[in-house]
Structures are given as C-alpha cells and as structure tokens.
Image 1 (spheres, rainbow, N blue to C red):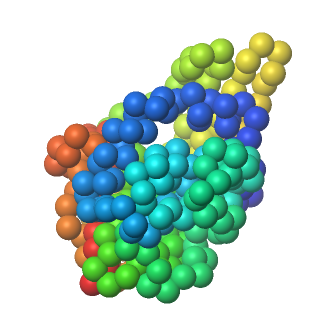
Image 2: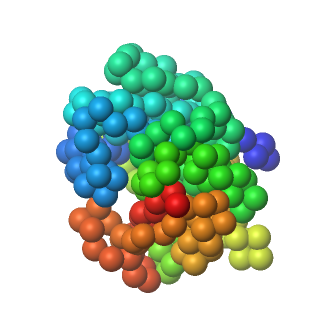
Length: 243
C-alpha cells in the first residue's frame, strides 16, 4: 500500500467522522492542558504539527497565541483556513519543517506520530527540535504506544457517531511493530473503505528518540487530567524541552 496514505485519507466521510468525534468541550480541555504544560502566554509563537482541521490551533489563536499549523491533508487545511484565517496554515510534510529557532513551543497531537517508521519519526523530531528556540517546550501525544495499545487491542471494532457507522479491522505485525488497519465508513448508501499502516513504538523508544533529536524528556502523562503515565493508560503524552 501507499506509505503516504495519510495524504488522502482525511476527506469525505472520514473527515466528517473526525470532526464529529471531538466536540468543542474536548478541544477546550485539551487546549487548557497545552497552555499549562507548554507554559503559553499571549504573543508566543507556537507550532501545531500536524494540525489537522486546526481545532487546537484555532482555540489557542483566540487566546492571543501566534499559531502556525502544518499538515499535508488538503481537506483538513481547507476547513482550517475557512475557520481561522488568522492562523498561518502551511501545507507541508511534517518531516521537512523549514524553520530554525522560530517557535517558543510546539505540539504533535493525536496519533499522527505513528504514521511513520522509526527513521522517519527521528527525522521529524530532529526537524521539530531545530524549529524550536533553545528551551522551547514540546508535547508529543500518541495512543499508538505499545504499553497503551497492545493490552486492549481488538481485531475488529465498530462504532456509531451521529449518522456515520465506523468499523475497523486491525492486524498487528509484532516483528515489524506495525498495525495494519482497514477502516470502513458507512452512511446510508455511501460507503468508503480505506487502508492504513501505523507504527507502534514503546514508551522507552519514544524517550530515546527525543533524546537523540536534542529534546530532553521532562514528564509523561496518561491523560490531559495530568495523571502520570502507567501501563494501560489510554494514551501517552510526553513533555520535552529543547536543550
């Protein structure tokens, strides 16, 4: 399959489902966490990568933060530009960030980090570290960490959100550390089937990647309520700082 599947995944029913999955109150709660842990203040320059449809960047921009959002997905960026024209939206591969010491803080939210293998993840983190000013903080959020995903992994899953039915079929390759997922979205007579590949890293491996890229790990959270990360936590949120 195409290793860059994520370039075209987020359109049609998939984009509609993604939008419906995160109500405004969830975005506001996550934005508060970002403000606290990144120590954000009005006027700071902050990078959201990848930004998706810009739900966090738009919320933070309303608080006076100077936001830049980077993503490859045209459908996401079109929506983001309509919603928040005050944000600098950039269509670019997150592994090829062009900036040097531009941002006071940055974050990578959702499961996007798992879209790449080890080499590409390090490439992204090195580019991210270069884009941060010395001392700049970074938050990495992922549910595709082995200690969170594997204890609860199901081979099939179904969900109904609004009028869209969602199903996934999951096949994990333990020797490659890769999860092959086929998603099916259905609404009435509409049906979309999309195949993806997502890479699973251990928490220790993520810490090593951060250090290798010039980012010092500070804390590990299991949720935005600031509980400490533990085996089986629903997600891993790593806080790091450029040395």
